Image 1 (cartoon, rainbow, N blue to C red):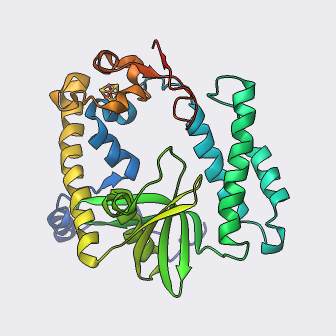
Image 2 (spheres, rainbow, N blue to C red):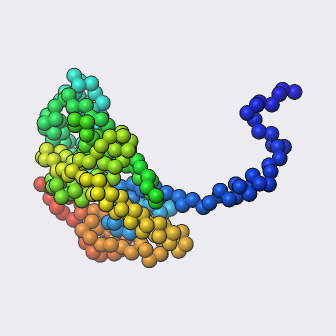
Image 3 (cartoon, helix red, strand yellow):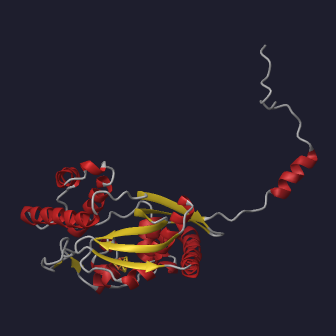
Length: 304
Ligand code: SF4
């Protein structure tokens, strides 16, 4: 018979009564931290019913197929992500073309001609944006996941780009929508404030500046946070989490009919991914067609 390892614990080893009592005494109920991502927090603010369908209902309702402006946004982010992985000497327009070819999917467009036009437009928008930055920029992080915890939540989110400017970190978020954001959008963005806190924690460096880069126009909206303004963002997130805990508990006890999940109509209903399952939203406004989010394209509605 082999000897027992000095590190093994014998199952026959008696456990003393004081030890068990001490374990019971230490078994203080610990409140679990709420896993909070920007999309989860913002979904609740946009519409509690949409939040329920996206995060609580099982099986999850089938979402609407991708829309053209989502395709442009997603591909733009992917090209900008892969571009910074290249060595500076390899960051050429030809490399952008190759990356774009790898990621392009003509989803959500009216027809092939519209898809081809927007592929080319995406290409030159990205090239113009990168041309303003120069190929020698070395971001501190690209698509970097950052996180931090407070007494009530565990935040986790992914930042498009983190720049290092003279020792200070800057959070960069790419935007591709119709309208360029302004400084007030950067100031009020809950996600950007939480990203700054997450970046400071993960990189152990100061991070107070947040920027929204509108790739189609090259405009930059920026805000310089203070410790106080960042703490207000934490308070905002914790307040939302308090509501989310209450709503999640109501869902577990009462199911999807809980009153916490009343629909909140707004112009978002025209774009909502789950409007096919929401009679209130459908009655409020017609659905936008899948390419209506592209600037300059016809803003027709569809029947759904
Ligand atoms: S259609 Fe409007 S009201 Fe209905 S779930 Fe979507 S956002 Fe909420």
